[in-house]
Length: 223
Image (cartoon, rainbow, N blue to C red; front, side):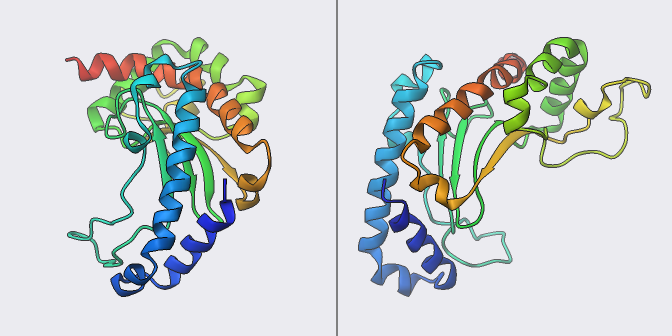
């Protein structure tokens, strides 16, 4: 993969985030899209070995538009300054957990888990963790998992979630406001010859965590 082409474009876009510049550099963007589409296809094929449900996906099903929705934003920059690939058996708009690769200069990551759950779904996820705490702890304290994902949730409560006992000894697992896990990687990661193997290993390590959450998410969405 031509990582330098992707990062060079994103860096220039970050300082020239306007329609005139983008139009003049459309050919560069199209070349980036071709690289990302190829990468998405490879990830789908490799992930399908342990997540067969993704086999029906096409690369474009896992890619996001670069255009920002600025209708309700104070930031009127028309373009995103990152590239994301989300391989999710139920589609990139589903709350179902999948496998996410984020490319942004100095802010790259490999991530997954439950993003932006509704209040009711978050309550259901916390209840599932509470009711099955031994199973959940076995997953998140696995040495390889913990080395990649030492933190659960990008945002966390400082207090006890409503409805749960204050003396619960594993309260740290109920305090996340989301159940995201992520592994930050440097830009240079994408220049390593085995970066795809490393990415797939990270995703495969994440799978038991996704499976645990998806059991509750799927039940919730079927109500």
